[in-house]
Length: 260
Image (cartoon, rainbow, N blue to C red; front, top):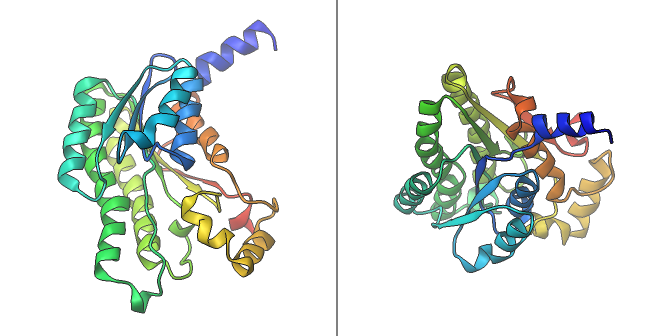
């Protein structure tokens, strides 16, 4: 690669001098995203349920050259979420927010317990809005910031036996578009990424079900499950200078699932 090409890539995709807050950063998509952001030059604020769960991601980010801080809060406790978000913006300027943390509850709608429904909605929707509202305020004051929400294929489809998750991910896309409309003129972009079937703890029950595994693979044109790193590249793009005119968009990374 020539020097000019390298300089162009650094200028347009590099994130040196930026700081990203990533929720659910202990593993899976969140962990891979945090490490990719560090490799692109960003410093990190990692959000997790406990300090021990963040140790691996923290080490990898530091190895990549990032300065790393952590915030600890249970996403089901909105008071703790609010306090943690306030702590994060008090300690560092947050330039990029990746709302990745999420949970899934599997049961037929008729058997879904109220507590399970509420837990999914609290983590996947209410916590996202709480964090975003707090972190976006200084972004809007600076007239600069990137917010990236992790949606799902079930932002577009109904799924099987996951009514709360499906409702929550539809809400994430709606919230993404609503905030994009409000904040675009103030320098803050808001986008979402809709991953396809990614090999994580959330999808482990599907991978272990031979029938579902076969049916899912048969529909994915690429013929494989995604891995967390397949999503991280989309986060880098939406965080970068190159995506400065992109807002209110849902970027689907699904191996072709929705096109079939």
